[in-house]
Length: 141
Image (cartoon, rainbow, N blue to C red; front, side, top):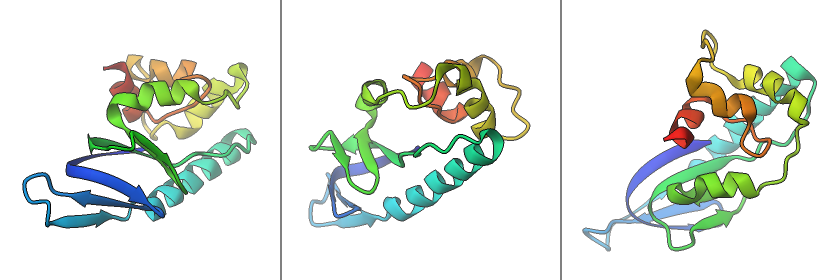
């Protein structure tokens, strides 16, 4: 899961997020998030598999803090507006047994992290989804 605050209106098509500037609609920029997110998802999958022997699909997600008329787009990656991310995560099916969530959280927790209160959401999971400690802090407000 990655988060971007973009200054503009974002449309996602064929794995590319195109940003049209609000202050100058003639200016556009493409955000090549899909390739990077797919790499991060594979890396996370490999860490979880090595540490837990759980082979679960890790959905690459780009959380967008911008005007996103589509609200959410599922392509090679999921693109979700920041205001909708908690609901989007809760709507996903639980794919990891509740008793294994702690193992998955430990596998994805940044090395050297103590796992204090900021990672409580990770430990309990968001509908069975493990997120990074950084994402857990963001979800907790």
